[in-house]
Length: 407
DNA sequence: TCTGGGGTCCTAGGACCC
DNA sequence: TCTGGGGTCCTAGGACCC
Image 1 (cartoon, chains in turn brown, cyan, red):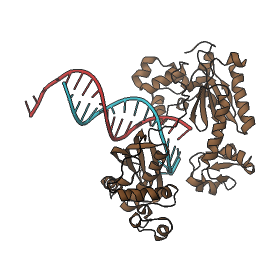
Image 2 (tube, rainbow, N blue to C red; image 1 turned 180 degrees about the vertical axis):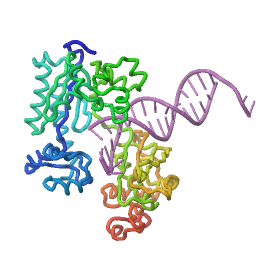
Image 3 (tube, rainbow, N blue to C red; image 1 turned 60 degrees about the vertical axis):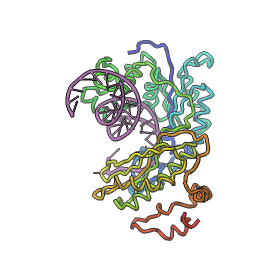
Image 4 (cartoon, rainbow, N blue to C red; image 1 turned 180 degrees about the horizontal axis):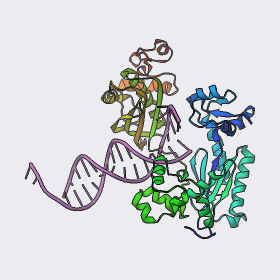
């Protein structure tokens, strides 16, 4: 274990408290001081203000349950554009102190603050307090800050005194700090690993860190050896200061009600997810080389099929029929499904204009003409319009659909 | 917690080759 | 057709995160 008060590395972790709910309280002052739950449009609580948490509401709870049991709670839709705006402001404040900032998620980030004590003429604790104060006074949000030798330690430190906490863990304090942390709270240790470790007699983060290297390597995989080193104050995870605008995969999926095994309904849902996912891919200017379609059964098992696409494609119409066949191969009439989805992989920057989607040049021209309307959700594909009873929803079609065949 | 949606990374084991 | 041993590449699925 690390045994000195010196700082061979210094990492700050910053975590906004109840971010989505707090932003709503800043933007809509009538919500100030009230119990607020965000996530109305999704049907489950995405975030809860501290006032709501006090009443016993947690993330993931169904909105209908919350309405029934807590009529005093204000339930609002999420607004990701506003969250993104506040997120940018938080990170730009952090960047005033150092350019070595990693945007880990919309409400959470890391910064490498080593070497800043002299130029700022402050200790690490003062630096943390300055950043925290700057954000809180200019944005009206509270954040929790942790500072230690590594990302893993800093993250534990920031969550230790939430909300609005500031916690500094230097090398000499690591042991006394980790003894207070249950092993399942370590970043990267999930439910499965936690219960496995508990069977080995490891209950606290200190129990974990106190094992010798052989023990860790014998019982666990590489990621846990890295976590173990991080908890010792040995910096393994670097700060990644590059803006994240590239993806390895893009997923669109949704649960529906009632669950069904009706092929037409499943197919129409898969197709609309396919269109949505490709829309997101085009926004990033990606050609797509592989797709996976999947179904989730009523008892939470997955049925999926991966399909390679050569050449890689930018628009998905040309593969609708193939998707239909592949979906047939995974739908089992004896099973009932509660959700569908699709995931795209194997991307490539779309440098050159795609050659041709269709053997029929005229059809391609027509499709390109109407596609902007589709992207603005003004039109949809006919196949996406089957209703629950396996009939076309005629009203919806009249309102929305331009059947391709009539163009 | 009777279970929402969108991601990342790692590893075991099969396929294939020499 | 059966027999080794060893390497690489790829894929599915698990585990984890917010």
